Length: 542
Image (tube, rainbow, N blue to C red):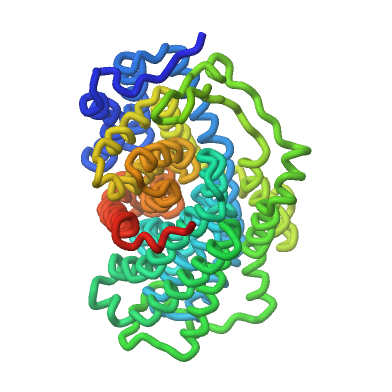
């Protein structure tokens, strides 16, 4: 039996979209306003999604339950697997005392907390995003800043705001590669268009980041550093995305940004440095051997994740290890229909091990190799890993529940209903086009998943309105990056990475700290797309 999605079960898009929004409103409302613990809020949102799917969208209960199970499985593997091993590397560094050495070196670049935020939350976080994605940069950047003396909520907020500009090019360009496959549009043109949007925001984000951290006056005092970090990243991202492709745009931009910022710090110094915490130890010198050892876990992380993501190595590993299993009772039993897709298409439902789990496995191997180089016994490594898992047990459950919610809305078609409601805006659709991507990432936690959900919808709507499919499809991914800071997965990862202290924030507090930043930036992206659609059409590649 095949069940067809119905995007207007109540007879019109307006009422259907209001019902479709209830699960997300329930989740975010409980987190942000009622201060309910994240796993309880996620469970409530999941139950609401199930009720809406069955009672309003008339999805068979068995299909809804299977979708929730598939989502929970995806939340644990690969996403939970990646987060667990990323935090294992961090805890390994802390347990061996190497993290304290790393703190002194980073604070040696600059004792100013604003420069540290630029270097770690923006530049270094962008490098990890470009190589790995899946929440890894938020976890690592947040933990690094906590070690440098940042308050937990501040570290979580800055890590989330910083992890925006490179997301469309994250994990070696997977979101845009996937978008090209879904829409059958040229990958090079999509990469160029996304680069012509996100490179501008890459210049803006460092200024926004420091303003959110230290206020307008604090930002003005270090505006040259913001310009160096963002300008070097944006220029490199633009050149690589337009003249090479999406695969290395994030990584190259991040490397140039880090190098440029460090070189600028050799000659430039803020007039009124804002120091505190570990930044006060910047005058302590570290022996060269000890300094090199402190970077071992992070060197192995970078090398392994980068190698694992290279297309040739990834395809070889997939050929050997990748396994896919059909989800019983769900695989090819849901039919997506126009206008979300050009032709009716069965929705696959697969447990996939291999390509998506490779990043987590690379992180685990990096941690184990670093532990061996630091002369830790197998029992000590096992003890650190077990304690890491125990600390993350509730967070892993929360991620599983939130992904179960996302998959339930995806297979029921309620998320497509929300997207279709925005397509009814006609002339103003270019403004709402990136907001659809923003919504998709907020629901699914992934720019890749948002492109799968709404990429073809953007193309179909563009053709109906006489606009460029390249522009609006790329806008879905570009807008999605700004939803990354409020998706449930990233919020939980940020609260986990900055947890463990009495003043550590819960998920609701983190969400309230970044929500308006995310919405304001998404609105600015909408204005840019409007200008590109109607005034600056020369910016659209042909």
